[in-house]
Length: 136
Image (cartoon, helix red, strand yellow):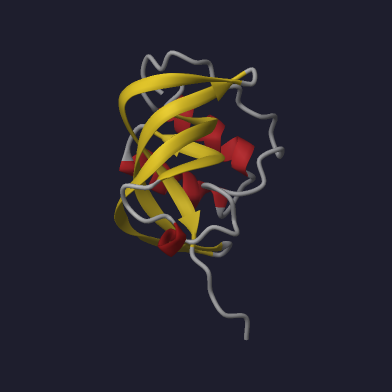
């Protein structure tokens, strides 16, 4: 993420299990304005988050992150992070063989580094949140 003051450690290939934040949190549980804390993949742009979800449908998440970052002019365009954030607009739904995901704009407030929180001024990022569905 562009000049973010804290370092994001990309997890080894295959170590990242899902896109976005916790699977058990739906978009409805993240109302705009409320501060949430989560760990997941965040990206600089909506297109990068969308591409991550699409690539992840065919490959593991670690490989998808590497591919997005190698195609970007920013070496850390997408990465894993633990952040405090406010959910923003739902930018649309992406359907893949691994499920459906909402691409959500988030306002990052702070990031966790080595067990300490650091404030992040004015940082808009994008993440993917799994869409809950019915098993039939």
